[in-house]
Image (tube, rainbow, N blue to C red; front, side, top):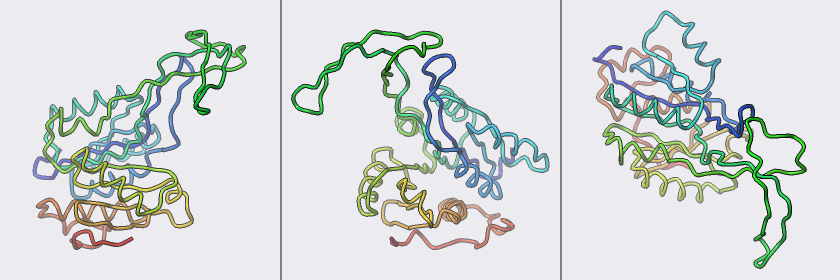
Amino acid sequence: MNKKRPQVLITAGTTREYIDSVRCWSNIFTGKTGLDIAQAISAIADVTLLTSNVEHLRQIQSRRTSSTLTAILFESHADLLRLIAACLARQTYDAVFMTAAVSDYIPAGAYTIIHRASTQPPHQEVWVVDKVQQPKISSRHKSIAIVGKPTLKIIDQFRKVWKYRGLLFKFKLEVGLSDAELIAVAQKSRKHSKADVIVANTLEMARGQEPAALIIDQQSVLKVPRVQLAEVLLNELIRRLPIKAAGNRSRYGRQHRPPLSAQQ
């Protein structure tokens, strides 16, 4: 990679956590947002993309005309944690975009439910279970329960553990919140992780007729159509980094844009 260009690390996709040897839990995200951002930013920076999407990896590897975008495949939370730590140990990054939808829990045991009874308060229950964890859990059980063990919050490791000092872009998805509620939750989350910028949306915003996201920093909020997100984040990176070669960004439009303005 060219040492004169900014160095950017981007994570994309989802993690898969195995319940047994053949079954796993995951989420609905494919990594397209991270790929779009990586492709946009590779016009002005050397990008390392950690992705869970095999097709995106093949797509990048098939493009032999440029060395500005390198992709590495991950599968699980543990894989991603290890890869990020290794990348940070060997390279100083100017910016990190943590777009990957990382699992909040990993499976920690499978149980068949023998009996369950409601207690007071009404939302609580007492269960009698039998552990049925196997390399392949049998399908003969009438019902099973999977215990989830919380995972380490990878985004919080950048400042606290890895002592990362570059720009940190955090991504957050919520469900069923208004814009005002989303902004409040996102600001609290951004501050907790000591991120410079947080990109937040709800599932309703992502699936709506006009998909959009909120880009939020310490002082401002900008609502951006999904189709413009990669370009706006590229320009935000240019604004925050002293990139002299920004005029050679080919199709990525404007030179510099003003700081994030308060729009909703």
